[in-house]
Image (cartoon, rainbow, N blue to C red):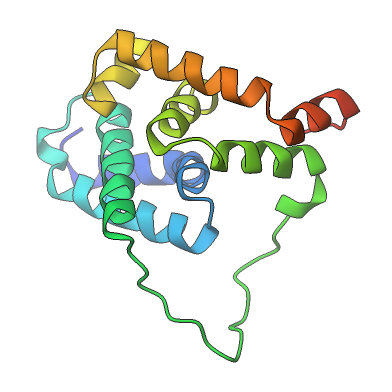
Length: 167
């Protein structure tokens, strides 16, 4: 993966999935779009050095950029009295289960949320998650265990799962 065509192909194929992962990390579509755009710009700068499988590299940029924004408490957008036109239809509110899961994820610390998103949403194995987050496999497993324990006792998550609503 060394040229512009490979990068464009990668972005076309993976941007929707990467945007969803970004949203699960920051819980705001506008911020998720900014996060993905920033991550892809950083990936482009290093594209010649990226190996045959760019996913771990891009996911690492995504999680590291999100963490640095959170640490700075980045608030790049200013509220306004008039709302802009929407980019597209927002279907996130259609299913209660999805919202309950999002709220449960939002209650997790950033590191645990990143592990859950990368493991269960991006379907990455523990060694790859450890590589992306720059930690050991044991840390990934302990963070996942702690996150799942918190999610098991979250009343909103339990209610959504036991109600049998489709996701």
